[in-house]
Length: 369
Image (tube, rainbow, N blue to C red; front, top):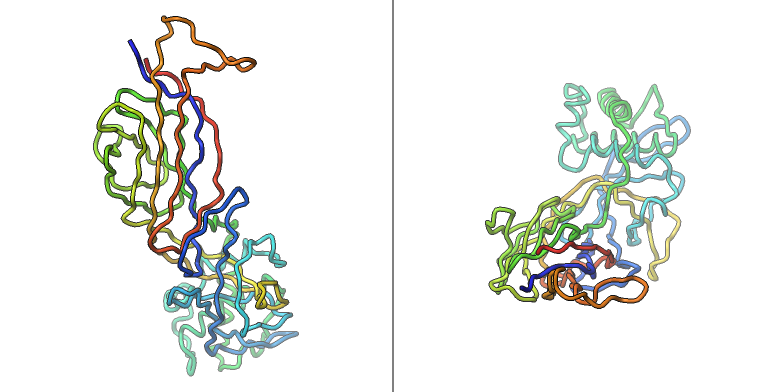
């Protein structure tokens, strides 16, 4: 009797990175990972002047146009250098940004003004009854959040007697929001800014036409797909599934028991970009320029399209009771119990995606006689 067993190598886990640039096209990356960073242009709106003990400056309301038709709220995280508003700003990891207290800053952003929640922040800080004319709630909420950030990054202190260019109500509102955010915010570690999608095959075996289980590891909100030709994607109960989420277990059930490959074409990939991305001004060649660094204040959700391809090769092997199998020298691994499973993301459609570092992993799979 012949049985089928999996014992082999996970050739490449699937990995995806979403670019925020809005540039059409896709780029497959090698082991070094993606080289495309998010880049945006600065958009300015009038803010409120803050009077400090040693330095007064305007909490100009700043946004970044990241090329997707939307302007995202950002804040300055340095005050002793100029804002290079005419230059593009390119994303950099925290380790490349010379600013301390970034975890605390991100904690402030989680609770602060993200461009949409001014009324809620003013209410939470207990200053909804203050007269803030002639300024808007957005301007006051932004100024209070920016003041809290500068207090953390640069040790900025407000002038106690005259905190802003406005009247007493504006002074009270901005100062109270600043104090509220610093007091109530806990540090938040740097989030995972690169989307990923990986397959864990450590438990996978094959029985007839059924191969699995595979377990999904991803920070996508959801990845939905149509059933492939020649196979079905099912759960542990044999029911078809049409989307993947983090931690989900699934199986591949072929129409017949044979080696083969499966291609899943996604209906959509949904991913939420987290707050906390940091940006630096760059020149025409992409080199960093001295200037105020910016930090993204809001998270937002986008949809993308791609193909996910799983290639599964399974060989028939004789049971242990039959004739001895030839052995490889040194390792002693069986020549007849080799199979492989590969996974890769093939980019298509929306194109604001790049293939992440192809993470290689090895997994020994047991026989299922």
